[in-house]
Length: 325
Image (cartoon, rainbow, N blue to C red; front, side):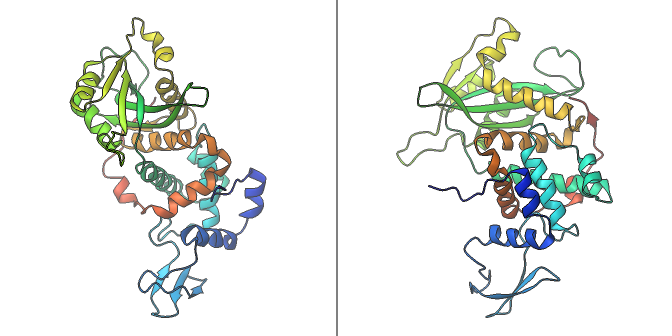
């Protein structure tokens, strides 16, 4: 079955989306793949008012914006700049510097470029929220924050992050990573672990009544065992006699955590605690679609079309507390 998303190289992207008109046409096709449908009466024909990017239904005369119900709603930035930013966010495995994208795309205000990137990250998070982890998952916690040693499972200066990676067997019966999810939590208590798993569909069942999530593999921290017992999940306890061996005994969850820290340290040069989850969503979104790298742009545009926008006041409700990973 052919994919509904087109594979695009950088050269093809540059040639295809060099004008505002090309971006408008593509956005229209992604929003209405089967043709325009009036949200009020369902009629399929409309006049397009190009100066305002508005469709005027020929039957009921209801007017609907091309960007309504998307992250682009009420934007004053040309779509061609949005498209180029989204392409780089989607395709760059090590993240992109928003300050650099502001300069390259000639966006006057850094705040505008920063807000655009966060709107894209919200679309990534909303898209991944539709999926549940299934089968066996590796699970562990880590700390994001200022450099330095941490005693115990927490620190006042660091943010605790839970990470889970689902595993499946390939044709050769070898364990492979599926989807990954990460989220900042207050602690690694049983309540925090339970809330995290609930967000990932813990308790959901198949049509046959079988639980989607079946087992947890962890380092044996008591909270994981307690939640597994309460949720009727098998707990595969990995004994870590040497903390440095965690990368070998729980390889995939530690690879995702390591990649996340490298991205935050690198392109982003540290992020605020308040927005950490947004950056983790971006990293997991790319990891979860690593087998469809050349389709990532179209997939992300589809996510942007399907997600409601977020405003600057909604993002900024208190002064950020910046820290380095």
